Image (cartoon, rainbow, N blue to C red; front, side):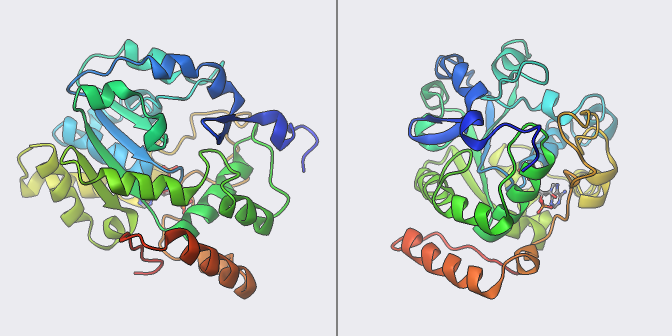
Length: 295
Ligand code: A3P
Protein backbone atom coordinates (compact mmCIF):
# COMPACT_ATOMS: atom_id res chain seq x y z
CA UNK A 1 0.00 0.00 0.00
CA UNK A 2 1.30 3.47 -0.89
CA UNK A 3 2.46 5.35 2.21
CA UNK A 4 0.77 8.58 1.03
CA UNK A 5 -2.63 6.97 1.25
CA UNK A 6 -4.76 6.66 4.40
CA UNK A 7 -5.81 3.23 5.64
CA UNK A 8 -9.15 1.72 4.65
CA UNK A 9 -10.65 2.37 8.08
CA UNK A 10 -9.46 6.00 8.12
CA UNK A 11 -11.19 6.64 4.87
CA UNK A 12 -14.51 4.79 5.25
CA UNK A 13 -17.28 4.91 7.79
CA UNK A 14 -20.73 3.30 7.77
CA UNK A 15 -23.92 4.85 6.48
CA UNK A 16 -27.06 2.83 7.17
CA UNK A 17 -24.76 -0.15 7.73
CA UNK A 18 -23.00 0.36 4.39
CA UNK A 19 -19.32 1.31 3.94
CA UNK A 20 -19.15 4.87 2.67
CA UNK A 21 -16.58 7.61 2.21
CA UNK A 22 -16.34 9.55 5.46
CA UNK A 23 -16.53 12.84 3.56
CA UNK A 24 -19.91 11.85 2.11
CA UNK A 25 -21.22 10.76 5.51
CA UNK A 26 -20.35 14.14 7.05
CA UNK A 27 -22.68 15.91 4.61
CA UNK A 28 -25.30 13.20 4.21
CA UNK A 29 -27.94 15.18 6.14
CA UNK A 30 -28.08 17.48 3.09
CA UNK A 31 -28.79 14.48 0.86
CA UNK A 32 -31.55 13.22 3.16
CA UNK A 33 -33.21 16.63 3.07
CA UNK A 34 -32.75 17.01 -0.68
CA UNK A 35 -35.77 18.56 -2.42
CA UNK A 36 -36.51 16.73 -5.65
CA UNK A 37 -38.43 18.36 -8.48
CA UNK A 38 -41.05 16.33 -10.40
CA UNK A 39 -39.10 16.59 -13.65
CA UNK A 40 -35.82 15.35 -12.14
CA UNK A 41 -34.44 12.23 -13.78
CA UNK A 42 -32.31 10.04 -11.54
CA UNK A 43 -29.64 7.71 -12.88
CA UNK A 44 -28.77 5.11 -10.25
CA UNK A 45 -26.06 2.47 -10.51
CA UNK A 46 -23.79 0.42 -8.34
CA UNK A 47 -20.35 2.00 -9.01
CA UNK A 48 -18.61 1.01 -12.25
CA UNK A 49 -21.73 -0.18 -14.06
CA UNK A 50 -21.60 2.31 -16.93
CA UNK A 51 -22.98 5.42 -15.19
CA UNK A 52 -20.96 7.82 -17.33
CA UNK A 53 -22.03 6.09 -20.54
CA UNK A 54 -25.71 6.26 -19.63
CA UNK A 55 -25.33 9.87 -18.41
CA UNK A 56 -23.88 10.94 -21.75
CA UNK A 57 -26.67 9.19 -23.64
CA UNK A 58 -29.27 10.97 -21.53
CA UNK A 59 -27.52 14.32 -22.06
CA UNK A 60 -27.62 13.71 -25.80
CA UNK A 61 -31.35 12.94 -25.59
CA UNK A 62 -32.03 16.06 -23.52
CA UNK A 63 -30.05 18.16 -26.02
CA UNK A 64 -31.70 16.62 -29.09
CA UNK A 65 -28.40 15.19 -30.30
CA UNK A 66 -26.45 18.46 -30.11
CA UNK A 67 -22.89 17.22 -29.59
CA UNK A 68 -21.41 20.69 -29.09
CA UNK A 69 -23.88 21.44 -26.29
CA UNK A 70 -22.88 18.22 -24.56
CA UNK A 71 -19.21 19.18 -24.84
CA UNK A 72 -19.74 22.57 -23.19
CA UNK A 73 -19.10 21.17 -19.74
CA UNK A 74 -17.74 18.05 -18.08
CA UNK A 75 -20.10 15.19 -17.33
CA UNK A 76 -19.86 15.64 -13.56
CA UNK A 77 -21.23 19.19 -13.90
CA UNK A 78 -23.94 18.28 -16.39
CA UNK A 79 -25.03 15.29 -14.31
CA UNK A 80 -24.15 16.07 -10.68
CA UNK A 81 -23.32 13.22 -8.34
CA UNK A 82 -25.94 13.67 -5.61
CA UNK A 83 -24.22 12.28 -2.52
CA UNK A 84 -20.71 13.34 -3.49
CA UNK A 85 -19.17 15.89 -1.22
CA UNK A 86 -15.47 16.59 -1.44
CA UNK A 87 -13.83 19.85 -0.49
CA UNK A 88 -12.24 20.71 -3.79
CA UNK A 89 -13.80 18.66 -6.54
CA UNK A 90 -17.57 18.57 -6.28
CA UNK A 91 -20.60 18.83 -4.09
CA UNK A 92 -23.65 17.22 -5.67
CA UNK A 93 -26.33 18.82 -3.51
CA UNK A 94 -24.94 22.33 -4.02
CA UNK A 95 -24.58 21.80 -7.77
CA UNK A 96 -28.13 20.46 -8.08
CA UNK A 97 -29.68 23.22 -5.97
CA UNK A 98 -28.22 25.78 -8.35
CA UNK A 99 -29.20 23.92 -11.49
CA UNK A 100 -32.10 24.83 -13.78
CA UNK A 101 -34.71 22.16 -14.53
CA UNK A 102 -34.90 19.61 -15.96
CA UNK A 103 -32.06 18.14 -13.93
CA UNK A 104 -30.30 14.83 -14.46
CA UNK A 105 -29.08 13.42 -11.16
CA UNK A 106 -26.44 10.70 -10.69
CA UNK A 107 -26.46 8.52 -7.61
CA UNK A 108 -24.99 5.21 -6.46
CA UNK A 109 -27.25 4.98 -3.43
CA UNK A 110 -29.07 1.78 -2.53
CA UNK A 111 -32.89 1.99 -2.45
CA UNK A 112 -33.02 2.53 1.31
CA UNK A 113 -30.75 5.60 1.19
CA UNK A 114 -32.18 7.45 -1.82
CA UNK A 115 -33.86 10.65 -0.57
CA UNK A 116 -37.60 10.10 -0.11
CA UNK A 117 -38.35 13.28 -2.02
CA UNK A 118 -37.66 11.49 -5.34
CA UNK A 119 -40.41 8.96 -4.52
CA UNK A 120 -42.79 11.64 -3.23
CA UNK A 121 -42.40 13.65 -6.42
CA UNK A 122 -42.78 10.49 -8.53
CA UNK A 123 -39.53 11.20 -10.43
CA UNK A 124 -38.38 8.91 -13.20
CA UNK A 125 -35.44 6.71 -12.23
CA UNK A 126 -33.16 4.66 -14.47
CA UNK A 127 -31.17 1.89 -12.83
CA UNK A 128 -28.28 0.54 -14.87
CA UNK A 129 -26.85 -2.78 -13.72
CA UNK A 130 -23.77 -4.73 -14.80
CA UNK A 131 -22.61 -8.26 -14.08
CA UNK A 132 -20.77 -8.52 -10.77
CA UNK A 133 -17.53 -9.96 -12.16
CA UNK A 134 -16.92 -7.12 -14.59
CA UNK A 135 -17.98 -4.62 -11.93
CA UNK A 136 -15.45 -5.90 -9.42
CA UNK A 137 -12.62 -5.71 -11.98
CA UNK A 138 -13.59 -2.19 -13.03
CA UNK A 139 -13.97 -1.16 -9.36
CA UNK A 140 -10.52 -2.50 -8.49
CA UNK A 141 -8.80 -0.46 -11.20
CA UNK A 142 -10.89 2.59 -10.32
CA UNK A 143 -9.82 2.43 -6.68
CA UNK A 144 -6.19 2.17 -7.73
CA UNK A 145 -6.47 5.28 -9.92
CA UNK A 146 -8.44 7.47 -7.51
CA UNK A 147 -5.51 8.91 -5.66
CA UNK A 148 -7.10 9.45 -2.25
CA UNK A 149 -8.75 6.04 -1.85
CA UNK A 150 -6.59 3.52 0.00
CA UNK A 151 -5.42 0.69 -2.25
CA UNK A 152 -6.54 -2.88 -1.61
CA UNK A 153 -3.64 -5.29 -1.01
CA UNK A 154 -4.35 -7.27 -4.18
CA UNK A 155 -7.11 -8.05 -6.65
CA UNK A 156 -7.91 -11.22 -4.72
CA UNK A 157 -8.18 -9.19 -1.52
CA UNK A 158 -10.50 -6.70 -3.19
CA UNK A 159 -12.75 -9.47 -4.55
CA UNK A 160 -13.02 -10.87 -1.00
CA UNK A 161 -14.02 -7.44 0.29
CA UNK A 162 -16.52 -7.06 -2.55
CA UNK A 163 -18.11 -10.43 -1.74
CA UNK A 164 -18.41 -9.35 1.91
CA UNK A 165 -19.94 -5.99 0.94
CA UNK A 166 -16.94 -4.25 2.53
CA UNK A 167 -16.40 -1.77 -0.31
CA UNK A 168 -17.95 1.69 -0.80
CA UNK A 169 -21.73 1.32 -1.37
CA UNK A 170 -21.71 -2.11 0.21
CA UNK A 171 -23.00 -5.33 -1.23
CA UNK A 172 -23.50 -5.40 -5.02
CA UNK A 173 -25.96 -8.25 -4.38
CA UNK A 174 -28.19 -6.25 -2.03
CA UNK A 175 -27.95 -3.13 -4.18
CA UNK A 176 -28.92 -4.88 -7.37
CA UNK A 177 -31.65 -7.06 -5.87
CA UNK A 178 -33.32 -4.16 -4.07
CA UNK A 179 -33.39 -2.00 -7.21
CA UNK A 180 -34.68 -4.97 -9.21
CA UNK A 181 -37.63 -5.14 -6.79
CA UNK A 182 -38.29 -1.44 -7.41
CA UNK A 183 -38.39 -1.93 -11.16
CA UNK A 184 -42.01 -3.09 -10.83
CA UNK A 185 -42.75 0.63 -10.46
CA UNK A 186 -43.44 2.04 -13.96
CA UNK A 187 -41.40 5.14 -13.07
CA UNK A 188 -38.29 2.93 -12.75
CA UNK A 189 -36.50 1.59 -15.81
CA UNK A 190 -34.02 -1.23 -15.16
CA UNK A 191 -31.27 -1.66 -17.75
CA UNK A 192 -28.29 -3.96 -18.27
CA UNK A 193 -24.82 -2.86 -19.40
CA UNK A 194 -24.52 -6.13 -21.34
CA UNK A 195 -27.69 -5.31 -23.34
CA UNK A 196 -26.23 -1.90 -24.16
CA UNK A 197 -23.03 -3.51 -25.40
CA UNK A 198 -24.95 -6.05 -27.44
CA UNK A 199 -27.50 -3.77 -29.07
CA UNK A 200 -27.14 -0.11 -28.18
CA UNK A 201 -29.80 0.96 -30.71
CA UNK A 202 -32.44 -1.11 -28.97
CA UNK A 203 -31.52 0.31 -25.54
CA UNK A 204 -31.44 3.92 -26.79
CA UNK A 205 -34.92 3.39 -28.27
CA UNK A 206 -36.05 2.02 -24.92
CA UNK A 207 -34.69 5.13 -23.19
CA UNK A 208 -36.39 7.48 -25.65
CA UNK A 209 -39.69 5.75 -25.08
CA UNK A 210 -39.30 5.80 -21.29
CA UNK A 211 -38.58 9.53 -21.46
CA UNK A 212 -41.50 10.18 -23.80
CA UNK A 213 -39.24 11.53 -26.57
CA UNK A 214 -39.61 11.13 -30.29
CA UNK A 215 -37.10 8.74 -31.84
CA UNK A 216 -35.76 9.62 -35.28
CA UNK A 217 -33.10 7.53 -37.02
CA UNK A 218 -30.95 10.65 -37.25
CA UNK A 219 -31.11 11.30 -33.49
CA UNK A 220 -30.43 7.69 -32.59
CA UNK A 221 -27.47 7.53 -35.01
CA UNK A 222 -25.97 10.68 -33.51
CA UNK A 223 -26.36 9.37 -29.96
CA UNK A 224 -24.77 6.04 -30.80
CA UNK A 225 -21.82 7.65 -32.55
CA UNK A 226 -21.12 10.25 -29.88
CA UNK A 227 -21.39 7.81 -26.97
CA UNK A 228 -19.30 4.98 -28.39
CA UNK A 229 -16.48 3.86 -26.10
CA UNK A 230 -13.80 5.33 -28.39
CA UNK A 231 -15.53 8.71 -28.76
CA UNK A 232 -16.04 8.97 -25.01
CA UNK A 233 -12.46 7.89 -24.33
CA UNK A 234 -11.19 10.74 -26.53
CA UNK A 235 -13.63 13.32 -25.20
CA UNK A 236 -12.32 15.42 -22.27
CA UNK A 237 -15.87 16.18 -21.17
CA UNK A 238 -16.53 12.46 -20.56
CA UNK A 239 -13.14 10.84 -19.85
CA UNK A 240 -12.39 12.67 -16.55
CA UNK A 241 -8.95 13.81 -17.81
CA UNK A 242 -9.77 17.37 -16.74
CA UNK A 243 -9.21 16.25 -13.15
CA UNK A 244 -5.61 16.52 -11.92
CA UNK A 245 -3.49 13.45 -11.10
CA UNK A 246 -3.95 14.28 -7.40
CA UNK A 247 -7.61 13.32 -7.86
CA UNK A 248 -7.56 10.63 -10.57
CA UNK A 249 -4.27 9.32 -11.86
CA UNK A 250 -5.04 8.05 -15.32
CA UNK A 251 -1.46 6.84 -15.72
CA UNK A 252 -2.31 4.17 -13.16
CA UNK A 253 -5.45 3.18 -15.08
CA UNK A 254 -7.58 5.25 -17.45
CA UNK A 255 -11.14 6.06 -16.40
CA UNK A 256 -12.30 4.84 -19.82
CA UNK A 257 -10.46 1.59 -19.31
CA UNK A 258 -11.78 -1.26 -21.51
CA UNK A 259 -15.55 -1.00 -21.77
CA UNK A 260 -16.02 -4.72 -22.42
CA UNK A 261 -18.16 -7.58 -21.25
CA UNK A 262 -16.03 -10.46 -20.00
CA UNK A 263 -12.79 -8.70 -19.04
CA UNK A 264 -13.09 -10.52 -15.68
CA UNK A 265 -11.67 -13.60 -17.42
CA UNK A 266 -8.33 -11.79 -17.64
CA UNK A 267 -8.21 -11.22 -13.88
CA UNK A 268 -9.95 -14.07 -12.03
CA UNK A 269 -7.96 -17.21 -11.33
CA UNK A 270 -9.83 -20.51 -11.66
CA UNK A 271 -9.96 -20.89 -7.86
CA UNK A 272 -11.19 -17.35 -7.29
CA UNK A 273 -13.83 -17.79 -9.97
CA UNK A 274 -15.12 -20.97 -8.33
CA UNK A 275 -15.31 -19.27 -4.95
CA UNK A 276 -17.07 -16.27 -6.45
CA UNK A 277 -19.60 -18.46 -8.29
CA UNK A 278 -20.49 -20.28 -5.07
CA UNK A 279 -20.94 -17.04 -3.19
CA UNK A 280 -22.97 -15.62 -6.07
CA UNK A 281 -25.37 -18.58 -6.07
CA UNK A 282 -26.00 -18.19 -2.36
CA UNK A 283 -26.57 -14.46 -2.56
CA UNK A 284 -28.81 -14.51 -5.62
CA UNK A 285 -30.80 -17.60 -4.66
CA UNK A 286 -34.49 -17.09 -5.31
CA UNK A 287 -33.96 -13.95 -7.38
CA UNK A 288 -35.39 -13.72 -10.88
CA UNK A 289 -32.55 -11.40 -11.82
CA UNK A 290 -30.21 -12.95 -14.38
CA UNK A 291 -26.93 -11.48 -15.62
CA UNK A 292 -24.73 -12.36 -18.53
CA UNK A 293 -20.96 -12.48 -17.97
CA UNK A 294 -20.26 -12.86 -21.69
CA UNK A 295 -22.14 -11.85 -24.81
P1 A3P B 1 -14.24 -0.75 -17.42
O1 A3P B 1 -13.43 -0.33 -16.24
O2 A3P B 1 -14.63 -2.19 -17.39
O3 A3P B 1 -13.61 -0.38 -18.72
P2 A3P B 1 -18.95 4.19 -14.33
O4 A3P B 1 -19.20 5.28 -15.31
O5 A3P B 1 -20.18 3.67 -13.66
O6 A3P B 1 -17.86 4.55 -13.38
O7 A3P B 1 -18.47 2.91 -15.15
C1 A3P B 1 -17.21 2.90 -15.76
C2 A3P B 1 -17.14 1.69 -16.65
O8 A3P B 1 -17.97 1.92 -17.81
C3 A3P B 1 -15.73 1.46 -17.18
O9 A3P B 1 -15.62 0.04 -17.37
C4 A3P B 1 -15.78 2.21 -18.50
O10 A3P B 1 -14.77 1.84 -19.40
C5 A3P B 1 -17.16 1.81 -18.97
N1 A3P B 1 -17.67 2.73 -20.02
C6 A3P B 1 -17.71 4.07 -19.99
N2 A3P B 1 -18.19 4.55 -21.16
C7 A3P B 1 -18.46 3.47 -21.94
C8 A3P B 1 -18.96 3.32 -23.27
N3 A3P B 1 -19.25 4.36 -24.02
N4 A3P B 1 -19.11 2.07 -23.75
C9 A3P B 1 -18.80 0.99 -22.99
N5 A3P B 1 -18.31 1.07 -21.72
C10 A3P B 1 -18.14 2.30 -21.20
